[in-house]
Amino acid sequence: MSDLQAQVAEAVSCLQAGGVILVPTDTVYGLAVLPGRDASIDRLFQMKGRPRSRNLPVLISAQADAVSLGAVISTAAERLLASRYVPGPLTLALEMDATKAVPWLHGRAEVAVRVPDDERLLAIIKAVGPLLATSANLHAEETHESVPEILASLRAEPDLVIDDGFRDIVPSTLVNCRLIPPVVERVGVVPSEEIEAILQ
View (cartoon, rainbow, N blue to C red):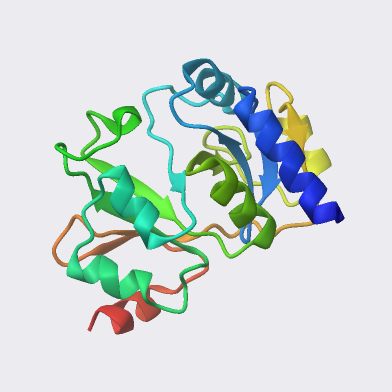
């Protein structure tokens, strides 16, 4: 078994046991848990000092995952999902179809989804399904580049830490596809002009 396979197996085991993991993505480091595990989700929010009322983005492995969650894939979202930034640093806020939403997304009008361009993380997602995930920093504070800095800033330690060296502190670009036309709500790795060009 390779190091990567061992890390994936350990992460899968930890998540299935209700753990919170600190994992590198193709952008920043993230904290991730399995959906539908209230105690785990509560712990993640406590680590960040983030209000429990804030919704968490979802990491998926493919567009089909978004559909299975009950998300509505608009024409604009289809174009963005077919772009060179997926998998990659592009997060899409999609409308939820209340009649098709999975139980842990009931009551949410929208869901933010991203397909990360990271072999390790994609292998984890394919093994356990979509993950609730958020940047590994205290709420409303800056994101750190290294694991030691991250651990020093959090209010509690994750159950599993995967250290893969420095990560950039620039997050994914967030596009709200519920709006017509779609709106870039957070400029990150992908410039706004690139989003506009794709949607033309």
